[in-house]
Image (cartoon, rainbow over the protein chains, first blue to last red):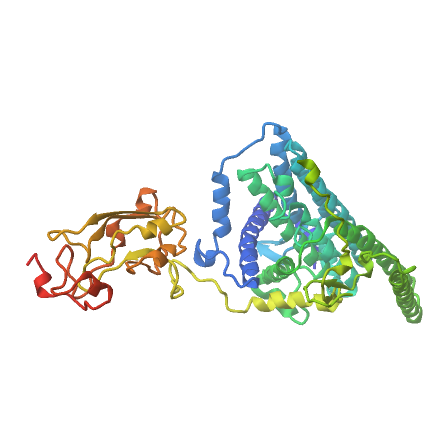
Length: 414
Length: 204
């Protein structure tokens, strides 16, 4: 059997055009359906019904919203930098579509009588390409904020881009272990390398870090503090209306689908079936793998919606602290551990050595944790013991307060 | 006379003199306790939704819901409104306009001396507080449960007497017509008139 790269390399021009069109259509349709799906699911989580008026079950609600947005007046503020103002949403929308070019959606299938795989192109540095494209997408945000010629969008744009850039680091670091393990940066090779075990199992910490950072990366709840609806005016797209706003809206949802697709590819075995259901992969001439792929993507999308329906929004400093002081150090340590294990096993170290290394790491982590907890408790105890009872009435320090006083019961003085 | 103003004595009261009782604050819950939120949102998806599909499904209102007003009639069809304007005076939103007129032998709309000739309620002003209903001395004005009062123009939302009057029920005669033979207005207010008498039907 030929590798995916060879398979795709043999595509004639017309097949590439057909595939590009298919990928684009899939993206747009999936986005429109996911907007509807999110609204319905979040509504059910809040014991509401959600949009159910336009079309059967409200299925074309998102389309109706799009038409409404397109028919609205398109305002360009007088203080705006016109060219950049128009360019920014285009950058945002196009870059997130481009990420889909390297996502393998099926195994080997027959498309109009031609043997190929549903993957537009397979470059040796596919995942790096996705990260690069995501970084270019940040330009859309920062330029939109800057070009609006207004204070709030500028602040919102800076906050959003700071957030995306910070979480991109953690995201990139969590992917390094995948590269180490699979020995490749090509998406199709990574999928092929997960034949036996998904990387979500083998590299569980990386998977968790990726899942957290992909939520931060897409500016979604609970990390949607830069454009918190209901609290702020709208972040970087405050001055945008009509189709340009629709492009940002589209970009946000395509982005969610894109990071979900990447997570599927890198950690959940891509288009492969669930363990034990491998026989389904040959159904419909291999096209059944497409269904597996979308099921996994939609699973991630559901997680996004579930998070939004459950968690309250973080404060900006908490968010940044979490990204820089927790996610990044943890992923660097995890890379060290994985790299050492990998080198040990590649140099033919015995099982006992590898096991003792792993156990040693666990012991070190536990020791650090215990020391950390002890230090925390010590600090707590230090704060609780007051230096000397003051001779006059003083309010308690915030760290000492274990109770607050509310009712007006007489004769209950402290 | 500034020299008569005494300076305020410093209050000898501190934070701890205020009366209180203690409430325990537990601080944040542990990691697994916080995961319970995910369970709650997930399980809620399978619960019955509270939404009423309004235009298709209409749930009955509460029994004493404050809806559109109604001008009631006595059992023989005469109007209960005596044009006293107490409702208009009680209205905090100034939504009611009443103009009374004298009943005559030829044109009797209500028992007694007076009737409401003009009766308008402006539903753009009305706040449905029900003070007019409390003010009405003859129970002429009450509220129905009807709440679908939206319309396109301001004029359409000023309801005239004809819009507000209760429909004629079985045994009622459309006024003007004389009072029940042998009955005075007092008998009407006591509820002693149980229906119309054939002699009241002057159009026959």
